[in-house]
Image 1 (tube, one colour):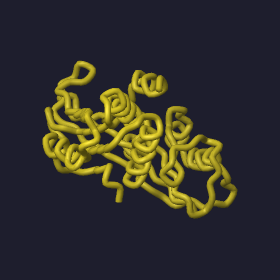
Image 2 (tube, chains in turn cyan, red):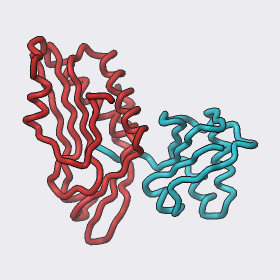
Image 3 (cartoon, chains in turn green, brown):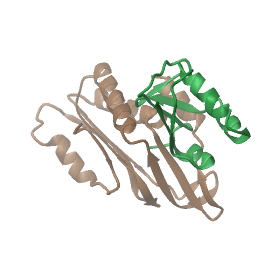
Length: 82
Length: 150
């Protein structure tokens, strides 16, 4: 299983802060995004947003980053701290 | 635990932080500090307060990487980064970056570098409250451009 977490505006728009996804058929962040986007139209538009950022095990990554069972994958909007 | 990084809801004292950077540190002649505060307006709207959310675990890891990067680029002594989370009112302190070095150039440059990368890599998000209601802040393209210049 892959633990998926969401933050800030994305978390509110999805009305979801975290979920567990089977790692079957998922080898990259892009695969996971694709699977999440298939849930419904709203999720599709949110996960197809090119400004969305991803992190795997607390490191910022690109869509082609490999992922496996046991990883924690995060999706969030561009950061606005400081 | 990394003593150079603190993510906290409580306020901090600039004087106390400077004292810690200077204490038993006779080799560094330069101390550069930056403090960020909550402004009363953004994009022409009157802001009454803001809430800061972060990604616990990743925040510390990303700040730690930025500090390591700064230490490889410049000859710096001590570093301290404080970022507050939770609800903050106008005028309150949000962020502190303190850097010491033997001579001023390294501390000035490293301090700005750390702040610039914190802005685009550390997972914090601000939600503003104004007369128009609540809204998440949009990231600024200028912040991205500035970080890429290093």
